[in-house]
Image (cartoon, rainbow, N blue to C red; front, side, top):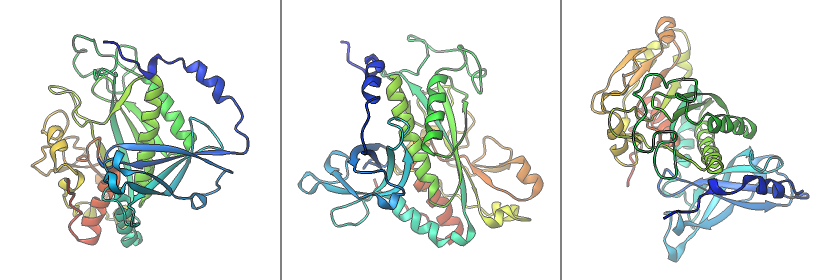
Length: 362
């Protein structure tokens, strides 16, 4: 039976309304992570004037029982604005506002990982921890089939698709370029994009950032991607292994360095990096176990490995870093649907404070 889909709507009709003046008002779209620790939610409110900084924004409430964050008998949750961006969909003066989530008693929600992440970053601020993240994702049709793939089969084997050019190699470039431009408009620090090894799979890079801001920008970039895909009538999937079999998985490789690593002979601090893969996954490693098999350009989840320019190691040290004896390392274990706040906290927590990283509860 046929179903309605946003791709069937006439986008031109919408533009007639979007061109109407909105007076002195500003629309603020509040964005937060829901109780799954993975999904993003949003709601919009009208402001009397354009806010000049995030501190001018008031908190907002929502029904947590509909986002897996509270019970229906005590459903009110609160959104505290922490980062503000330009709205690429409604344009200036309208804003996207990333928020932390708090419970009725003003304590952080269990899935408010930003609250703990910020505390840890503050503890090691003298080390100036710096991050960059490489977000892979897969474009899917609303039927759950990879975008551009034959409806009753598979495309040719992997090989020509990575950074490929041409209609038979790059599936969905219009979406990717729209997302790139929207992020730039919003003020998200997006630094690049490329087609990945599996057809219909792409990557964008965010950073570098010091401290807490890495998570804010990556999560807003994901929100923008979902919104762009909604306009095109497709889905952005962050599943770590979207297609079983002989196809590449999807990760979120994370670059990390401290002041000591970036200075002369910093390689010795890079080589002291400790392994804490299970702290990344709120599902106890189930998502990454599907991805980190030791095949398809991944390490094995049960075996720690490190190497210079080694694409299948747990930790990759760029060749230039090995030569210069200072710089950063790339943790290749975080997966596409990871919470970047959990990942950045775990890397800093264990390596810089000496404590065990936070362990997640389902």
